[in-house]
Length: 34
Length: 186
Image 1 (cartoon, rainbow over the protein chains, first blue to last red):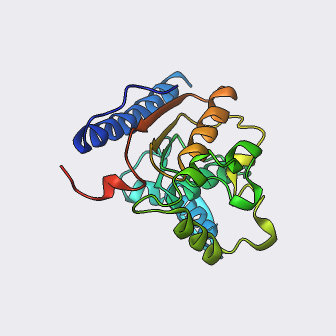
Image 2: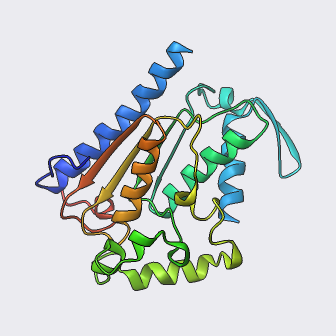
């Protein structure tokens, strides 16, 4: 549940952008199945 | 009022045909070039509260439109007066990081004072953490900051979503205070 911690502001921002993109991809994946 | 505004905005965006504030509106999603099946809610802090409240409200409505995914960053999901026991402990983030920069517990309490839910603090429109079911909730990304008074409630919400079978991604911005990404330190 607790992932590797980032080391800097840019890493934290990249982590957030990755998470947001993950949510978008999950939604598309779920839509493609329904 | 913020919840009503946010919900009406979601209806405006998602609707093929809807009444918003007694005005009939149509097809806005097509006007703005969007896909009605890929509408997301996203928010930071109190905005994340509104995002997940809107998701639930739309799910519980008789409308067919649904939110496709949620992005909840450093979310506020529970009023302190109705904290589940672990969140009220002295070692919880709400107490432990009471003097954190950007958002202290005192400032957060002041925000709640002005938000003023009155006797509705335990309503899911105010404290979505208290929900007992998350049926058909969309994939959700939750991100919390390590030194944020709100950290533990964000984590608790993510845990509930995960236990309910919601597709979830959860991150901790370790060592950071609330709202740090709004300050360009890159």
